[in-house]
Length: 257
Image (cartoon, rainbow, N blue to C red; front, side, top):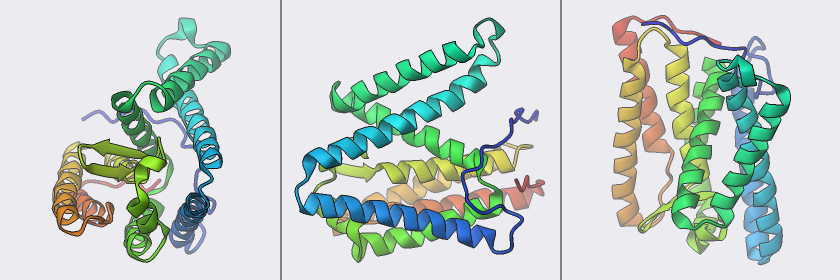
């Protein structure tokens, strides 16, 4: 199999992988950021500061969509030298960001769900490409544990109980099921990690996706019984086990960075 040509990864973790204990430090960094963000949103929801909440969401999602557009479009435009120009890149990125904002805040629930899935997938794959293997695995494991604590003892459970629809753009809804944007991001990150770290064979990625789907189904069954259930533990655990077990069984070389 021909491996995809990879450009230099953009560093998104604060501690270089060569530093002793870096994976744990990077994982703690992600957990602290997410915990702080959840706490701030819970505090604002409790105070019924809807305008502030919407403003923060608009700024965060617009910035994320613009930056991701710049990253992905710059990679795409390389294949079209005639239009591979900085100003075209900036213009196209702004157009994508505007369309994304309209989909989230103006076009209705179907367009919103499509946009949330798109940005969740794009951000997760970006993380999977940019974060070194060991840090990525520890980050995912830490977040799965944190998700349990946050749902049952922390702010996420309280936010979910009050309704994720109050955080328009930060959740995906299908019928009676609501899923946070973070769950989509980290499912995609896991898939990206397996894909980019085992570039010589697609089977570990396929099995990781199967593991995520099986874990998601198990989560849905638990959700029916409990009403609120953490979305990360089952899919992350089964996805990691399925992906790495398949790679080990095939004897595949691992790309560590």
